[in-house]
Length: 269
Image 1: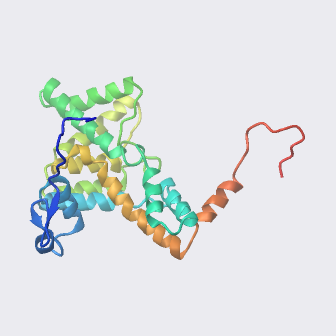
Image 2 (image 1 turned 90 degrees about the vertical axis):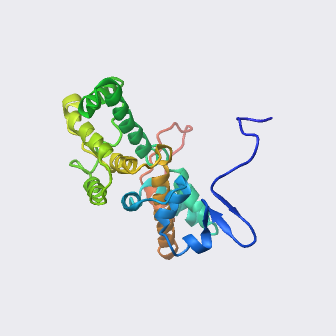
C-alpha cells in the first residue's frame, strides 16, 4: 500500500561514492569541514543555501539565546533519566527532547505564524498598515480567548532582555526589519485590547529576526530543538561529574501529598 504521491525514494540533501561525500552539492571534506561553523552548516543542510552574513549572525544569535534555561522540566527529565540509565546518554537527551512540546519547542513557530498572519492581514485588508493589522489579529485572538504567542513572561515583566539583544544583532547585521516591526506593532496594540502590557519575549523575537532573513517558517521549531540539545548534553555532562538526578526525584517525594482514598484502617507513615 502506498501513502502519498511519491513513488521513488529521493533526497536532495546528500550522496556519496568511495571518494567523496556530497552535502547539498558541496564536497564535505574539501569545502565544508574546517571551512564553516555549525550554525552555517545547519542553514545549508536545511535550506540548501549558505547563509549570507546577516542570516549567519541572526541564526547564531537565536541559538545562543534559546539554548539554556536552567533546571526546567526537560533538563530535569534528562538528568533523572541519565541517573537511572547511565549507559545511554542518547536516551537521556531523548527524554529531555520528548519532554519539551508545544509550550517550549512550539512557541516560536506559533508566534512566527502569527507574525505572518499579521503581514497577510495588512496586505489583504489594511493597505499594508501593519498597526491596523496587528490590532485586528490581536482582537481576534482575544475574542477567541487565545493567548498572544510570544508576549508576556512570568519573570521578565518588562521586555525579555534577550529581545533587544536579538533585535540589535539583526539591525547591526543589516537584516531586513519587516517582521521585527510587525512584532513591535503587536506589542504596541496589546495594552489597548488586553488591558495590560504584555511585552515581547524571546519566543516572538526569534521568529521575527529569522523570518527577516528568509528562514523557513516550517523549520522554526527546529531552532529551539537544536539549541536545547546542546544544553541537554551540558546538563548530562554535569550530571556525570556532579549527580543530582536522584536528588531531584527525592525532593519531589518530600513534597508529595496523596489526595486519593485509602482502605479502612490505613495510616500514612
